[in-house]
Length: 204
Image 1 (cartoon, rainbow, N blue to C red):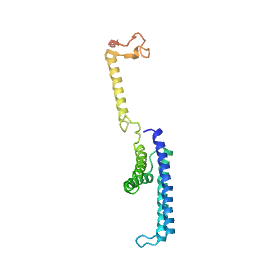
Image 2 (image 1 turned 90 degrees about the horizontal axis):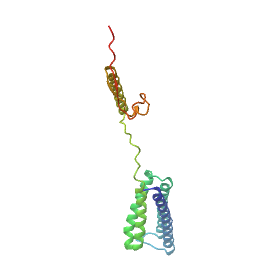
Image 3 (image 1 turned 30 degrees about the vertical axis):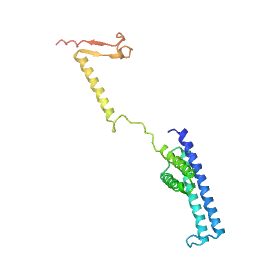
Image 4 (image 1 turned 90 degrees about the vertical axis):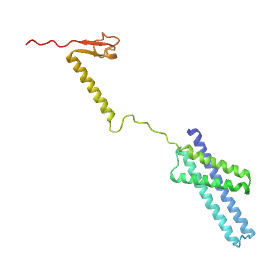
């Protein structure tokens, strides 16, 4: 998944989580104000306690969603996978939205459920889009330089074989190098073999 798609999705996820943070904080603060002014009570709890708890809960959840939004924003800006803290925040936000989506079906309606599932999809996509790490170049040679030493030994063996063939008399295959003038006198235009006569015996 290229950065053309995943970075805008991460930015959209950050904006949606930030909007959720503001909405949750304002909603809980509004509920706290309503409970305080109407002097409501639930199961014998004091209205002031309920109002303060609602406001504190709104601030805590708002800061939590702000932290999740910052994590998603950093993912989009840096274009790389989140760190440990950011990953934990985004995974927990995905779980929270899955649970809220299940609860809001009966309490609010299918519209809220669809919204929660869309946010859940954005968070999961942001996590999975940066999950794959690009593999680096693979070294063909084994560790310890064994391949290079093997090649040198082969080259040395080939050179010794050629020198032995020249000393005892025989043929030497010049190959393609003979055609381009780098070895020999260029008379073998398309490569071939050169007959090397054995050395003349010395008079005793």
